[in-house]
Length: 242
Ligand SMILES: *Cc1c(COP(=O)(O)O)cnc(C)c1O
Image (tube, rainbow, N blue to C red; front, side, top):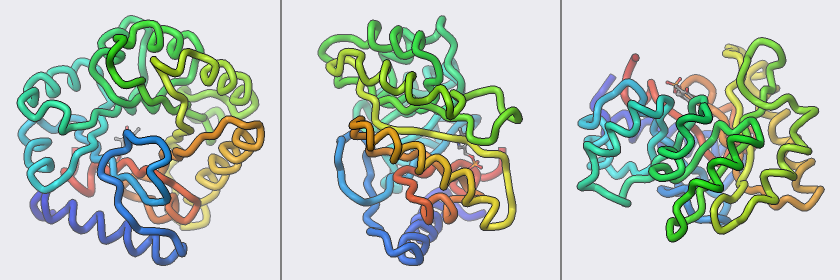
């Protein structure tokens, strides 16, 4: 592994090559915040288990969007990096319990892991007025029983409709996220990503206007980009082994 800066550069090159192979626009969108930012791809740097200094180093190399799994750990990091303020964009990608929603509503920009209406309702209620609306993705369990997190595909349409109906000044439903079972062959990697894109297209055919597919990690970002990912979540390839 090289430095965080050179690792970031390599990941960006992987994204550019994957976009070229898929005939997609390779524009890198630094901040995921803006709805309808266009056809490019957002690189989310997953900094879980790495300290604030690693995030600072990635920021110095131009990275702005960071993903965290554990609320307590993330809050400590956000605090330690307060001097960078809104230059950093924080995404919660790990499981969220009801008793942590307030801190998340107050400190994060995005939540990728909503899989129950109750969590979305609490986030909407607790998002401070005056802050930009929280950007939300629904986590879908595309691999079936093997994973406990995520809404089942059959229950997705009802959940999506209910979340989309929450006050948009507080919370905006932007799309879907998944964490498929690890797979090694390109075809096996693509199948669950394909499924997630189909689910998004079905919701959009019902008028939901979703524009974000959060899928693909260090090992399978090429497969995810081939299937239409708009945001890839990359930890190991940037920060090293955990
Ligand atoms: C840890 C994690 C990642 C990053 O995985 P790498 O294999 O290290 O790139 C992405 N998404 C989620 C939800 C994670 O928990």
